[in-house]
Length: 88
Length: 88
Image 1 (tube, helix red, strand yellow):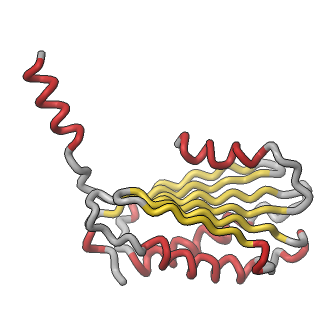
Image 2 (tube, rainbow over the protein chains, first blue to last red):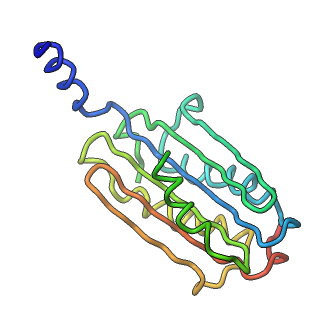
């Protein structure tokens, strides 16, 4: 067992090949009449901002929206393919 | 995702008189040579995007940066003064 555990533990500690960028937006409204589309509006524009700095494969973006009456969240999870794709 | 849930649950218990917008960015790098300034670059541009939609009092913005070798986070916490300040 020690051979296998060494073998796998070595790999588990190996550096991951990709970077990851996660963005979470949360909008908490004091009244239920709030603008529940704010996060949707921000989502597109924030993605555009990020794409100015990082080359993103569209398939590597995961977006999750959770919309409540007084609390909405938007999660964006991005796998950044190559470190050197980060542009200044 | 426990990181995110802790971040938000911490604040959920406080009574809120105003709207709030919270943004959390997390950048996980596969190597320590990564571009640690990515979040700083994104911060300014994301704030500009938000200010297109919301009138923000600069004093009501709280920003917290936590920079590590392979994992950096940026928290932006905004009090939105008036519901009707949210622009389309």
